[in-house]
Image (cartoon, rainbow, N blue to C red; front, side):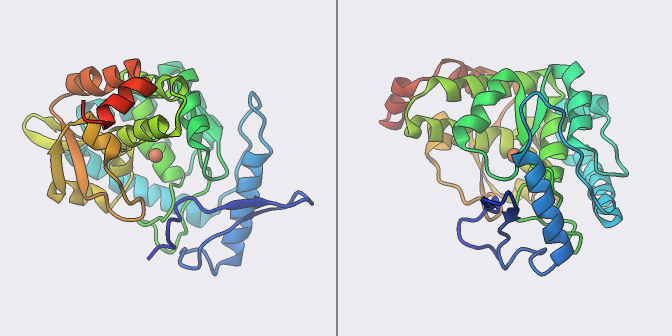
Length: 294
Ligand SMILES: [Fe+2]
């Protein structure tokens, strides 16, 4: 189903300024020349964007707007069943458009008055240190393209549905926004690649794929689950483990398939007390000690 280790499609910028997104042959849009042309144009917008400038306007087709409308409607129904209260309240406050893909600038403008977070366009993979580091300043890197319309409920890459329905709704909560910020400060504080990887894995198993007990039911709060039509129906059947910083920071995960090991928090307070406090205080030494068994 996936090219090995491909998650974000590589983006190449040539000397003549042209930009090419290298979709894998298994990508649903691989054989669609019109889609690929649009992917190249959208990636070029991000590559040419300068911090401080408004996020450039991306063009989408009617079919793509329909993909957003369909997925956003179906996910909203599932969120009522599977999402934690904090997410539902934040999504309500943010008020994303339901019938069309919002421009990232629009998402940013809705978000900033709520929690101070702003969006930045990303052509593809952003280096970990940059991606996490700017969270400390309230910036979130986001891809701007949408999945191929032939398979509206599937994407091999994080697209705007993931970045906005998953992350912007979450970032509209001041409690979540603070957790993103402390994760960013942690990423800036550490110097070694190992410690940075550890921090990003804790982020992966919490803010991307975390689950929480709420009124005895298992709910999701991770943006990766909340933006995935398939995963949101499956997470309760996964291998659910108790929250454990060391286990999260050292468990290998496979980004190309459903996340089968998940870590559960008993409450939002526990998420803040354990994970928030870890990010707030960790450094290279404390992480090395955790890994060594302490
Ligand atoms: Fe994400």
